[in-house]
Length: 462
Ligand code: NAD
Ligand code: G6P
Ligand code: MN
Image (cartoon, rainbow, N blue to C red; front, side, top):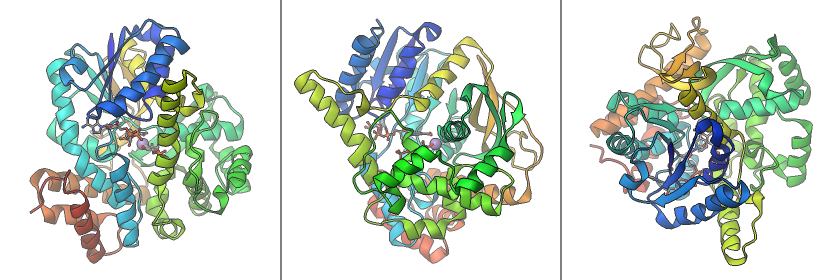
């Protein structure tokens, strides 16, 4: 059984490999392959992966590191995709260009997400075609590559028969934080959720079958943030409370990475949203759409999340690998292991072993939310077995959420259409329709700057 990681040079590769290796008996995995278009970045990550597989965990899983698609995908059963088209340098542009025009600067939401989407659609289709060509007939691509909402819509349109499941680790990261705050075990937790990717709500969270949303609401109102006390104290010590942390400090598996640096604001934002709309627990990403003005106000247009990640997670990983190559000494805190890798490895396990375990997935609506379009890509709980997700249908959703989702879903659809057709007007309409953009004039200014910045990546728009 072969699992290939596409985007093998990702900062998340070591953690994902660790999660796979810890499940090696159930997954019956014989070989892990890393595939990337940046050979040197991936070679370095490969050195650490080799250590994890063969020295740390002492497995006999074969490791192949390659930039050749044929070698990467031949007879693979699973492809875990996690490519960042344009890398952090382009993420920085995605975040900084909109901020210069007073709009939310975020890598997957608003204008930044649309720019990242326009870079990723065609490489993703190319990846699917390579996997179709070389991998086993019953392959599964489990895709983390962002922006997952736009990527999944593009796959639906361009490669409707691909065996791809798009996923996100944010809901599970939120559940991790909830469990720590309320001191409960996440294995006892089940939840209901609806939305789009990075745009949804938890409508019920149950611990051992008992509803805990009221208790969680009380916790959030009392603490004025959704973070366990220990994290808040830590954040204060690190200076995150006063603003975006200046020195990165992103390494270490000892803490949930989503609670560091500027992530602080989104946990604060959960409180600010629930103070006004207490009905559901919002995904942290809703902050960018519901508190867009406040987000711009506390952002530093010269230093965004991309800088935190480059100075933190990326730097500590690659410096740590260089140190290992020079001295033979390894410090495990240079990479993350945990929920992000566990989530995708467990999903593979559910598919392979037909477990019918419950996951949140991005899927075509097909009536599961009755008052959303049939062809919208939504995020919903599903039971996962060997034939893929069996999505759990629900009742109609309230008008507020439905209105927000319709605006966002139409924006994403227009963007994908515009990108495929090379239509400037459609892409401009997508920018104008986004809730983070205040006027059509601003939409045009941001788009024109983004066309310039993305000229090596985007299709030509006419
Ligand atoms: P990273 O830049 O460290 O890694 C991405 C890798 O992808 C790089 O090594 C790059 O060379 C490679 N790449 C770029 N284009 C490629 C292509 N066409 N084919 C193969 N490889 C290619 O980025 P990261 O921060 O580790 O994140 C990796 C990806 O995972 C990103 O897309 C990120 O947005 C995504 N991510 C998603 C979730 C989620 O919830 N869905 C969570 C975390 C990360
Ligand atoms: C969450 C989201 C991902 C996103 C990531 C960014 O995990 O679900 O989709 O890629 O955050 O994290 P970063 O540490 O790179 O800012
Ligand atoms: Mn995500």
